[in-house]
Length: 261
Image 1 (spheres, rainbow, N blue to C red):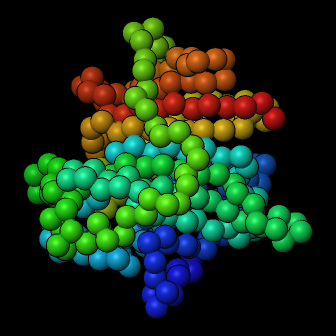
Image 2: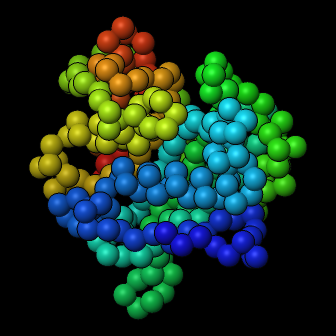
Image 3: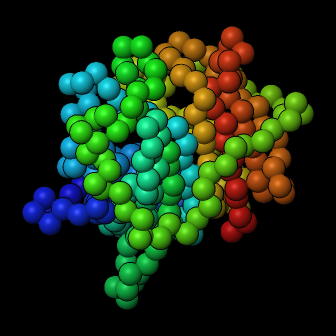
């Protein structure tokens, strides 16, 4: 990853990544989970460079937590392909901030191409009591000077994933060491990977992910059992997923929109 020069720092952060072959699926395209990791890394680089990142927050016993994420892709980068993630803060309130992403690269002729976009909502918590805390109080409200409202993010915001009692149970999984991140709970991207494992490889041979949404409701920790429930959404290629802990507490909901290849 190469970050932008701090001498030319602006409201929009631009970061270079590579679709490494072991981060790609059987078709040679970047896994959605690894793309999610790159987006979250770009968010951290951007906020750190501007004085409200995790490096600063940890000293104040604060942490960013992802609340919602929506990713909509026209195409996934192919293995060994360099690509750019742009990220910017669209708005900030006391307890939530909106951050957008654009994923781009170049085609075979060297022309600029857009792979897709992302939208996210973040909260800040006190690491001791795990409760939301005032974002605008951090570093004298440093985040406010970096809000960018001019750059377009032409995808829909993630809405509430509506589900009925007819959702069918699919499976229950255990969680382990590799599921847990620096915040001490199951990593945001691990949920993405577990959701996408609900479909067999043969499904992905004829379908690709057009849009992925996830909304986080509660924390899960290593040792928790996670149960997955699924039902159709607006059509046969859209699915809604609910994930619950073994005590019945819902931890997140997701919506996946596929298109046929």
